[in-house]
Image (cartoon, rainbow, N blue to C red; front, side, top):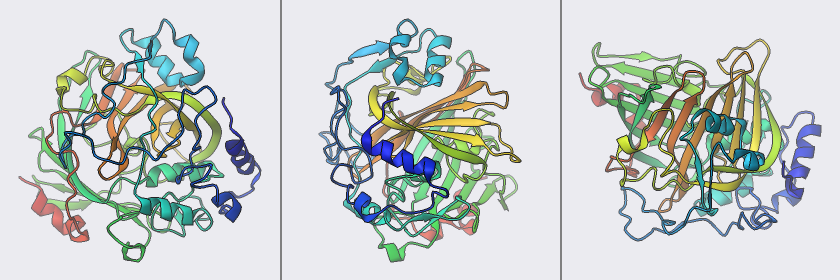
Length: 452
């Protein structure tokens, strides 16, 4: 594992600190924006020159971009440097996860086309300012299942514990209020699938850059609304979620609307390892966005930091030049339009606590240092066998700006099946910055959004 001086110091503190709940010193915080990026990544490139220095990310619109629509590829002229497949993966195993290697072994047609590294992640100045202030004041609550001291920004830019790292992922900036549409495909081992299509509405209250910190509701992370458009048997069903930072003081609230019954019901099971919406058992609720929700069933440990080949700048695989049938293939998504780059990631291990239960006994997440987004995850069953491997094909929404979740793929190594989420290739609206309000995210609003 490739260690770096700043990281090594942070890890020493993490392993020796008895509680891990303390904020960092003013001297440590002063490294943000100097030797560290404003969100806490190492600003410098690597010694080999294969990872460049961070220069602010990609924060200006590109030629051909139309607000709300797909994002033209700013790196379309890049050529693939090399390809990793089953025949040569041993050469690159230091920069691969066990799950990626398992995929290469199982599927002869799966490969990883590696391109020049582009550190495109960039965020609004307000996020940077809030993050800098967070470094010396934000603390985990005593249970670790939440935090206090901020209403925006990365809460722990210089993390000292695994819990702090996962909370950075959960709260990474994802825009303000907006609408989008996408589909998911639960794919059989033979490559067959029935699409499930959704409309989504979000109000990311925490970090909302259109509101001053004092205007953001205390303890609230976001409102989330999901409407199923197809297939017909599910059309009109609506899910509403209110998510909180202190999930002990206030657990997630969720409601569903069933158009057949015309009733709004509480949905207490929309959490943990309960099945995801119309996912055919191929993902859990807390798999969405690679991990979401309460952290209390796991012990979280920073393994270290490493350089790894990860999906990044996936403009082509998420873009309108492809149809869904071009992306979804038997066993895995089409590897030809996928883009992999060498990035530094935090390796974070979550081990199931004694006395709790979950389908996954262990999850190992590989988290982008520039955005705090989980890009790859390996998940193990209760027999300690590698079971599922997940990848997140992100792309920079350069007009907002933020590094956005794109095509999200959860592979089941045991069944040979997978589920692909956030498929937007054939959608016309990718990011619609709609002026939504809290009134749009009440249980009473569900009936008006659903259809019979």
